[in-house]
Image 1: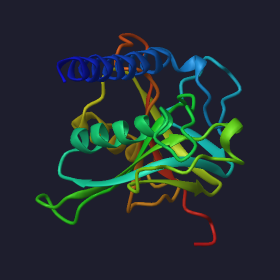
Image 2: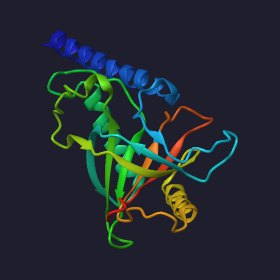
Image 3: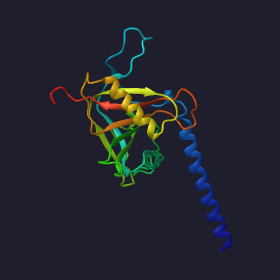
Image 4: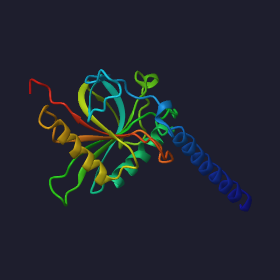
Length: 218
């Protein structure tokens, strides 16, 4: 019995170490987003002079597929942390075909603010599904993870650096709204945050806030 117990303990430790190793490998691959597959888009307000700095980009994205999970919470960090690990386990093989799926960028979060200061907000955290898995996307084993299609959309994006916290996301969303300054209409019931980098990346970090442009016929 002691021998069997010892074998089980060693096996359990090896499984844990393998999972940690996989986590480290996948996260380290995201040290720079340049090596990760990202959704393609058309830059609609690209300046003629590449040196010109514009306050926000207007982009058009085609239809895309995402692995997502929704969490209701009071704090942004709590929701995004839990959502990230649900999705990370999915791409590490917690799916019906036990398939390992490459990490992509960005980690997108749709935020529907709560009705008041003491109300939970709704956070939908998503990983982009790359081209190799669009047609045959593995079904998640966790019922809290689902595959969704985001229809084509035009949006306004504001980019900033650093290690973004909840207060900074809100401040940058406010800055984006002020930059648009009523010149365009956008959806006000929700917005997106997007992180492109590993927590181990220290410099030249890329974060974006998105507002979805309201179609002209609405």
